[in-house]
Length: 366
Ligand SMILES: Cc1ncc(COP(=O)(O)O)c(C=O)c1O
Image (tube, protein in one colour):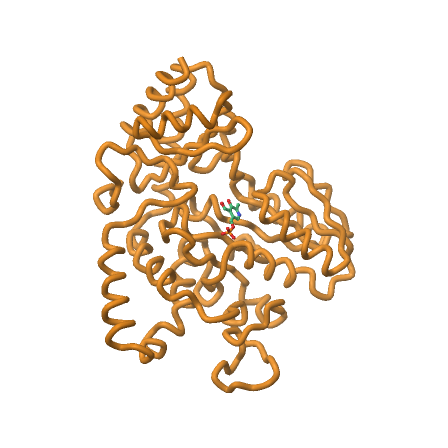
């Protein structure tokens, strides 16, 4: 769709935007300006010239891509930290006894849920999104919209309704779906959502994550990490903590401004992206790749029809096969023991890339 906006070396087919998105070309130039002018010339004054509010301002830009009206998303910290904030916020004061966690989740979500369980005394139960078996004991469900290993897309509407039907809350991890398809957090009355910005949103390595706390939850949301950035009067230097009235209460400490502003610059490429159109391109690219893999190889595609922008292929010797693919200019990745993952970012992956990647995979595994 707009490959010319990205820095991808000639001859490289980049299919790992589901792990680290490619850099939009103008980010390097913007960062020069940030370092030379904002940091260099303006020095400390930059904090009151836009840096302090950046987490909320960039949060609103991410919010547009995930169906959140302004004032409900803040950018900062890592996804893992934001999982912690969201889960602790969700279980605060509950008399319910269990946290349900997607059993196939990316490990960090499960690890953090275990920490929350051991700190709060709730039990943790792993369940597949297709059979959650929620009850009135369930305080919160932690789910991924797109599975990091298989690329399976889970039904956010149905699963959110399922949680709400028993009075449970739901925390959605959008790491593999933000920048992939239209998401309607407000319309679906999602309780909390978190996600990273370094995959399909192209924010750069380790760029700050986001957390969504809808307006109606903000007054009661207790951030378990009561850092000074979330205080209602951060420069009042008060000895006791009083949270900000709005989304800023989800902030913790001094934001990583360089990473934040690299993300801010990267989001420029998203300004006029029509997410419904992007979704169609993503589906077309993944269908094309799957069709060619199935035609040219004996490998099993494990990604179901309901999917994100990823095709996963079961392949013996996955590590060596991926090393060889990379040596031939096709960059994807693998997850143990035997899964090759290929991400299709429609902003910079073309039909030709999808076909050539499948042909190269066939040559290597023939
Ligand atoms: C679903 C999911 N959650 C969380 C993370 C990572 O969390 P963090 O940004 O804290 O490293 C990943 C990273 O790939 C992920 O795929």
